[in-house]
Image (cartoon, rainbow, N blue to C red; front, top):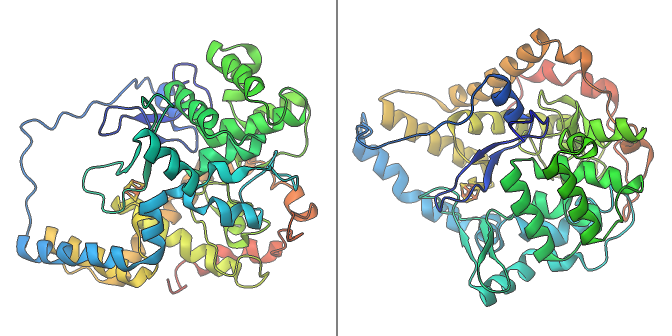
Length: 408
Ligand code: SF4
């Protein structure tokens, strides 16, 4: 997809087993790479000098306690056992995991895609949980084999299971794993393509719940037919071509597998983040359906995520208590570089990163051209709670006034 400059093209990374399973997927980065004439980046660390530490002993001392901290965190224990598919049962129960083009129609049998089901299959077929990088203590990445025990796909994640599974009414884990593998090989964002396919299905271009019908669309994408190219350009392009006004996207980007009607802080993130509907920018399920306090919850999460992204610390490997994480990162950085960075200074990295992103968008004229927020999230109640996104627009508009002052 990179070569075709598809808007859903990813920057694909080979994982430690050599599989092209990890992607910088959101925001069409692959298309940007191609537009700049960049084909690939190869990193050869042979002969590279060892990392120097200002205080090696303090660095190792800080690291020594970290496995215990992570082990004691209940949500991380679940991540290590089931990976991100571990959240499928609660999130589908809430309606947050999309079903049949983000509708209220249920997808019967969705449990087949959930963590315990994949875990059982993995035990039978000798699949495994692994880390997407050496040294990760959480190891939340599902490595999934076919019925013959041969490798089918890696990093088989919640968002893919949602957008290419229940969002298309499909509950066959082998079929969705195949979709994931095809997407890996094409280098396309599974959220963007799955969302586009859901919209296409609602327009009769695919039969909802039918694996072969979905595979026919993948075939179009792979062959680069006229419609396949539009699908690879994502949900906004697909809806436009098909004359559909109910577009599940914010700022041109497909809604990921956290429905803003039932996780309202996440909805605030979709509305306000410089990245639009990006699940890595700030998902938050604290008191998810309350109308009040969601701007603050979103803003705190956006600051933390921007800080973690800037430092290269995985947002999924974080303990629930953010203060513990900030303190840990501060001690590591100080030991590595011989600095005296405080917790507040570390958090400021997140605040400044968001400011830079907002400024970039403004300079690029992105604010002027971005699409309006989808109306259906405010008007179409979502089963089973019948909740809608109802955070007032004035509160959304005022979010950045608190950027420098809100306590994280
Ligand atoms: S916790 Fe993060 S670094 Fe570790 S395997 Fe999961 S996604 Fe990768």
